[in-house]
Length: 142
Image (tube, rainbow, N blue to C red; front, side, top):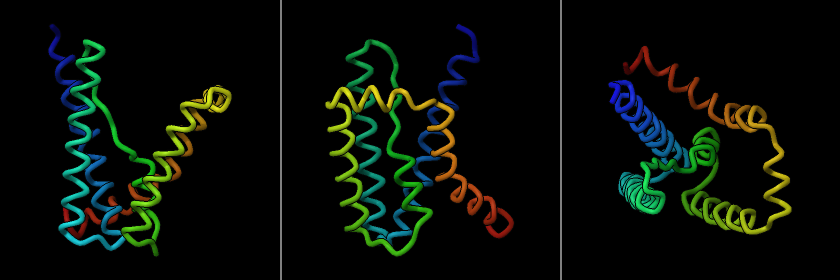
């Protein structure tokens, strides 16, 4: 096995998890979550990702790494004026709408027609504010 394969997997896991973790912490801070609520949120995400990754890897008989709702968390992190209960409610409603979207075939086919570049641009528009703010803090807290 070439060394680049496990190295690439390791980098993907660290960046995927680390990026999501940083965005979740920023989102929790944006909604005024306490340290206990933030720790609970992070723990829930870690456990959910671990269970989902293990189940999908077992089911597909290949390594699978899952990701969390980074765009939703980034949108919350880049906003202000929301409370923790409102953020939790938004995630629950969004999750339900995603399930309904997946079950409603005409809508699924319509969404599949959205070009990948447009979807990536939409995500970039949400994440860019978070990334710019993170870069601004480097001089003060490297």
